[in-house]
Image (tube, rainbow, N blue to C red; front, side, top):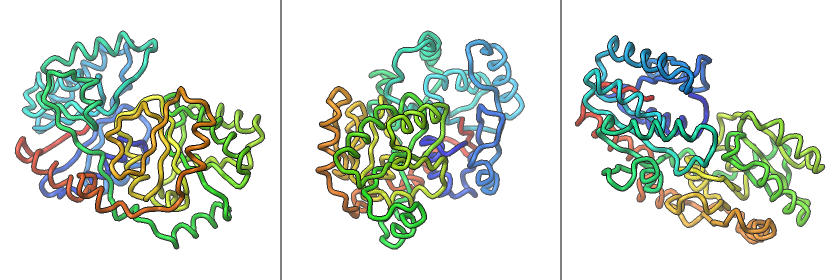
Length: 357
């Protein structure tokens, strides 16, 4: 439970739930503790640790799942966020009589790689192991479940009040980061292939060539961070790019930004883009991301096939003023206060205890 988009979405809901009625426990697939573990435990949640899901340890993993549900037979709802790998968790849950089994899709594509045959196997194993089908967007639901299932779109909601624009916070953060009056282009996301950091750096290089009074702020960690840092240094941009690592003050950081740049190769419906809109930022994003993301009119799409100068034009000609988008987000169901009430009702209608996987 680190500070990724999915994990943050779960915590956004968890904080708003009445834990006298609903309690989240978490099954995670890492041995090390995550950023949110202390908060989960303070809210009364348990954390169960499993090995990573890998083709070489399928049999061991399946046996551990069976052992888990045989031992912990109090759960009436299992809500699985493992995309196609939800099939394995929910198969074990079904075997041990869990009445409500939710598979939740958070992506709309994963591309083609060496893991594709195993993903296809996992999707084939889905069958009727779930009996509820959730997704962060219509596209994400169609990608994992096809057209044959009745899919519930559960919005990647945020705490709208937390992100509302505050000029004083903006000035404090910009002073802390020593930004001055520079135009700040921001990006938040793991350093992995999906987020397309290499192309992002190329875009920023062209923007900075056009307007040297710009700076790029990158928030997150990941296995490609060192490669991106090397590229930044090679391009002579190291004083113009700030690597902030994992931060807990995302809402405040967004106050200091002027434009949000997000050229991902694929996504479901990213929580961070809901957050950016809640902060009133204008967002320049790739058109590989579903148009369901545009909740407030603050999203501008552009194809990854377009030349970099087209991206530069979008950025330079975009407004840097923050807008108040709170009413639009609430009316469209993207405020956790309202959506947590809906989710609570859903869980209660199906049963009481839940485990998030």
